[in-house]
Every structure is written in structure tokens, then in C-alpha cells.
Length: 415
Image (cartoon, rainbow, N blue to C red):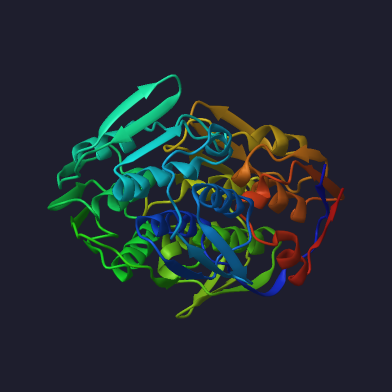
């Protein structure tokens, strides 16, 4: 099994280009199913999750080719509306396919999706949204069947601003008759990116980025060309890495406003930050503890909770991190404790007492973001750290070890 071997106590310096966003690419790939023809998507990262989505689209009948980071998706011969259970279980984001398949074929059959085991992520919000625009949904024996003779506009009011459910509702509604209004919609930038792609296809969607999205249904969509937005989670991870290693790095190909909640906390911790139109430079100062609560965008992102927790393990004083999105997202705590961190978890809250330094150890990545947190800890720890189960990390970070090596990190992959 492949693993990372990291020698710590090296300052990261230099610049790194941020890849296209996984969390924007996956729903855009799904959206290509809404019509027949060839769509072109630029800045698609090479990731395990992207490959999994590609496998699903191919099984449905799509023909996909790649030219470096440009993906061509030909959906002309797509005719299936059922996704095999083993592929659904491989990736949570496969649930995005319900909306576009229902929109195009008026029926879809999927099993319950898989992905990282970070706690319950109920699919009921997705089902509720599809029912509100005219779908009949049946759940039995671990499968979800949805069909509709006709999709009609309706009002969708979410109890919680779910990103996936918001995007699924958008994709199902673009080919529905009439107007659909989504209230308490998630506001993440990736949703605005999906809106941009859908509108290039001929959809009439407005309001993405706010809590109310309006979709005026159209009769037909056409293929489109689009460049995926930057990955703000990858960008935040590298910013935290710069601070943890007391380094000086510049991240490029980023929209700074996407990361205000993160950069504000990093400044509170002690970092010096400079921003431009498409870059952020970060230099570390003396680190001090902070309190953080994860919230839906524009609050602090849950996907950066684990890397930030890793950072405050070496900050002076006590930090308190509260996870409000997923209930089982402290799996990195036991691994960080092996490295000398002092962390106490009480329910959804972690209390961290900063230590002078961490120590290298043999650890395992329990999920994607927890894995990135362990890599960051290893970069600053004394001695050598071995990180097993790196396939989790490959789900969301493109060429992570090469990018870190370019900044001076001593990290190699073995196995």
C-alpha cells in the first residue's frame, strides 16, 4: 500500500498554482448529461473522485477523452438512467447524477451513495427537492427510484443549506416547465460556477451565491465550454501549510474573497497576509490559539477544519474548534495525538492545548481532509512521519507531494 514519508521541520517557501476545484468539477460533469453532444471542460484536476465520476459517465454511455487538464465529454449515446451500486458506493458526489438524469430521461435509479465516513449526510433533502418539482420518489431495498411524466416548476425550501441538494435541484429544474425557486439555498462559490455552466448550456438560472435561486425552465439545452473555478479548499490547505512551517508562500490562481473566513482566522493566529486579484501571500508569525466554528459558506468551511486543527496543535495557548456540519469529523485527532498533540474531544467540540512541537510517527489517513491534516502535521514535526492510506488524500488533492516538494518539503511516496 502506498504511503507518504515526510521529514519535518522544513520551511515552505515559493509559489504554487492551485488546481481547478473538485467540488465544482463533479456537478459540472454531471450536468453534461442534461443534453446530447460534446461539452468541453477546462482545468479539470487529476483526482480519484474525478476518475470515479468519469467511470460512471462512461458506463452510462458517455465518451470521455482528456487532453492534459481539458476534458471532452460526449453524451450523444447516453441512454441509461441507472447507476450500479458499486459505483455509487465509491463516491458520495455520485448523488449529483439524480438531477440531470431525471431532467433528461424523466427517470433515474441509484443506490445510496458512499464516500468518506464523516457522519450521516442525509439524502432526504435531495429527495424532497426532486419531489417538489414533480418527481415521484420510491425508496426500497437500498435503492432510490425517481420518475416523472413531466417535471414542473415548484418551490423548494431547504431546512439546511445543503450544497449537494441545492445543485441537484438546480440541474433537475432547468428542463422543468415553469419556474422553480430554491429558498435557503447553499451559497458556496461552486454553486455559482455550476450556474455559469448551466447558463452557457442555455439554462435560465439566477441567484446562485445567495440564499434564493430562481430557475426558469427551458425546453432544450446544448453542450457548452467552461473553465472550472479554483479549488478554495486546496488553497486553504496550502495557506495553513505555509503558516505551520513558518514559511513564506504565494498561492496563485485563486479568488481571495472565497477564503476570507480562512484568512481572517489565520491573521488572528498570527499570519501576515497580502492579497492581489488572483493570489494570496502568507508569512508566519508567532502562533496563538483561536476559537473556530465551522459553518455553511461564507462561514469557516468544514473541509478545512482538520487542517486548521492540525495548525493550532502547535499554537500557544488553548484553541476550541466546534464542528457544526458533520458529527464524525474528528478522526484525525487520534492520529495527531500519536504525534504528541494534546486534544480533548467533547461531542462536536475539540479543545486543543498547544505544544512546542509535534513528533514524527506512523499514522494513517482516515479520510480525505483528515489525511491532509496529517500531511501538514508531518511537515512541521520533528523527525520522520509515515502516512498510510494516502489514497484518501488523492481523492481531493492533485499532485500534492509534487506541489509540496516544489515549496521545499521533504516528502516522498513509497509502495
